[in-house]
Amino acid sequence: MKAKTLCAIAAVLLALPAMQAADKPAPKVQTKPASSHGVLGQAETLTGSIMMVAPESTVVVLKDSQGTTYDIVVTKATRLRSGDRPIHLKDLSTDTNKTATVKFVPERSGDIAQSIRIAG
Image 1 (cartoon, rainbow, N blue to C red):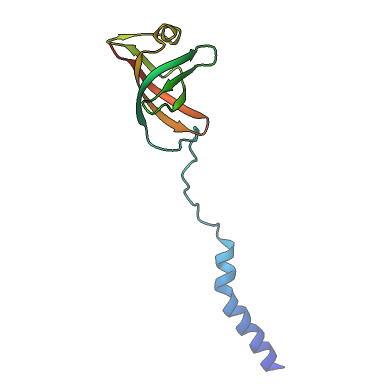
Image 2 (image 1 turned 30 degrees about the vertical axis):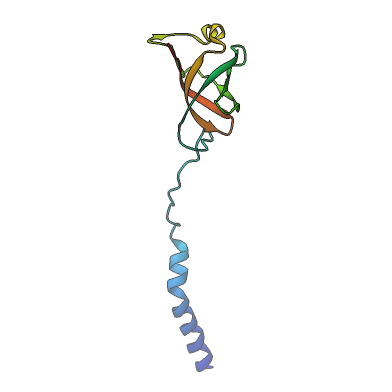
């Protein structure tokens, strides 16, 4: 009987550190928040001809020198310029077939323009 009691006490004493650790709250793990915009890569620059401007859907279609077209999404933060003067999205409609340089960020929702500059 004494041996069983000693074994039980020994088992409790051996398990005590694990039981004390279980009483402590788990340490907080710092995680990086996911991007709210779904950015897929670094900003890129593209030069091509403006094929179409759709101010109602805030999209500019640009065609590069290889003939590839890009739908570029214009936001309120997009800087639009013609030469040295700032312009509005509706003003781009008159610049169809002109050369433009677009700095954009590829995102899950589309290519988001940071700036569009019309040559000239």
